[in-house]
Image (cartoon, rainbow, N blue to C red; front, side):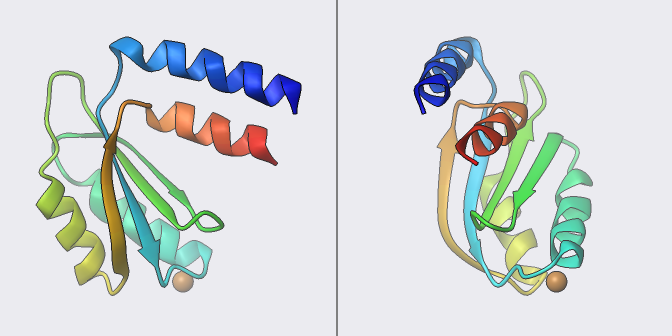
Length: 107
Ligand SMILES: [Cu+2]
């Protein structure tokens, strides 16, 4: 627990200069194929640097390439068109790698 807190503090410090990531909370993703399909669609957007899907947390995160901006409405539409229910959209400073590491640390 203590280690997780220290790690989280470290991640926050790292994110100071960092990435712009669009983080969506998505209902309806149930299996690895759902995750793969969404990942593929969002990876095809030209501004995308990385995509992270976490089924357990119902999270889809798309990180923009440096100096680029994601079209948040387009990200939302892609996920919706794939048949999933987007319940929340936020912009966060963490990179996809940081979100992945944080999820791992919580386990
Ligand atoms: Cu599925």
